[in-house]
Length: 390
Image (cartoon, rainbow, N blue to C red; front, side, top):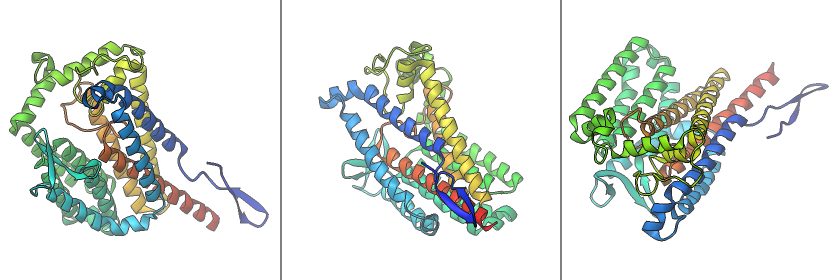
């Protein structure tokens, strides 16, 4: 985006900075484009078998991206003050949708999990909306009650009680992975908001202990943990997903077997176009392709944190907290998905932002990226105004 010239003083012409962080935009677009390519490659076999159309999932993902861009354009045009005002309303709506999942005839159950509400051509995964709604609410809360959060125990525990309620609703679905990401994101926002370190440490230990107990108390989750520790002990049952993903990375070597030439996606690797699209990418594009994805996510998250820091310095605290929340959310979810694919973490069922197949994830992530760009835009505008004032 080209810079514009303005007159800041008689006889002086100053160049306006770009409206957005170019590196952030480029990384997001590259991940989006690479995701479309890998969804097409990873889903071609299962799509032909299930629908008779090899590019069925690609067409749907392309439609999700197009709608996501439209939603993002609308979000980008809305000022941050609007989002600050509607934060509590968005929180209530998200909580209402999470509760509605358990009403007869409303929630849709797949593989024992009730996480979706039928919304026309897509199944709306409510947890995705809840993540963004919670980030916006917490950002507003930190602006309104920032001093209480930093100085009193109650100011910190009140928002964490809301987070805990959301976490319980997610665990009831059950969606352990989304609950972990949501709680961790909220804790990151509170930490960056200046909460007392000892109180933050106590809550981290408490949240970690509770989540750990929940993980080992459920036979299903415990089986995932034991399979993660030694997937080769039962490679045709509990360790099947992980062993197939590891085989995919092993076949990829340095430069991969070639785009479209994956063997593991041919009904060996479950959920190849959703949760395990990174494993297919590792097989087809090798270590070089895998490291490229990791680098792109690293740069995106780094630039998002810089947007938050710059917003705080420019006197835009709400935008700063929103940017921190989005950076933590995307970074944590990407880290967990990549870790699961590479056998570093137990299976969680989380999508890879901007890349995995999925309507709800794509639409909400596009909205989050647009909101991040809005923060960047208003921050740069405020910086120009402050510079002109001086």
